[in-house]
Length: 252
Image (cartoon, rainbow, N blue to C red; front, side, top):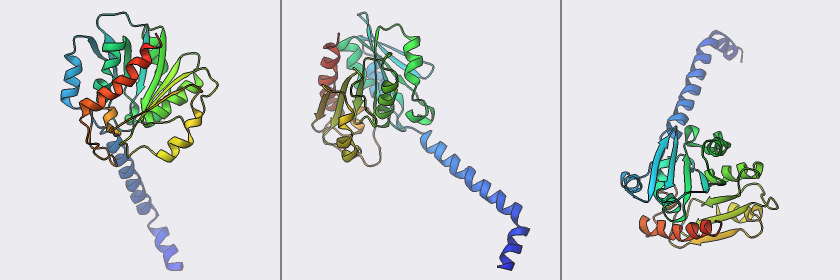
């Protein structure tokens, strides 16, 4: 033990340098990992840009979809899933702008993690002239959107969840809720999802889409743990649109 203590005393500075190097390498690895998100396919982004029914804008880290031929009085602020870029959701959310006259704003998160900017919806709501707002998200983004909604019931009318769940209760808040999952989703923690169902308000709309996996709520691939669903993305997106478009239309 004496020799060890002597060696440590003589090499204290060298050990400190190596510890610092290891910590820096670990932090760099985490930043690189989460700073390299899954993007939507080029074709999916181009399809939205080419849709004459939609006005597409990208402003300060926000992707905005507006109806081209109607006045929009309803808006949705959407939080991406962990390590997913906002452009991955443009095509799957575009029917809201094209068919339901909803202004959709998909926000870019620090390190692509909504947990670092849970309150992003506030600046969106302040910057856009829309009467009624909803907040929503995919996976981790949905959980963070639900936390925002629970603390800002005066700013939003409801919550929209894709492959996600509320990890705190919004029951009794007066918020409306839509929860959509995919039957082929192998990323969503089903046990946690079932446990947290009671956190949704009474009268919430809960839908499960047949043949849809986790990534098909967007237009990206490669997420660890997600198995192929056997359903084309185009079909998956139409199944999603058949739920979310009438849900918003029924809310004016």
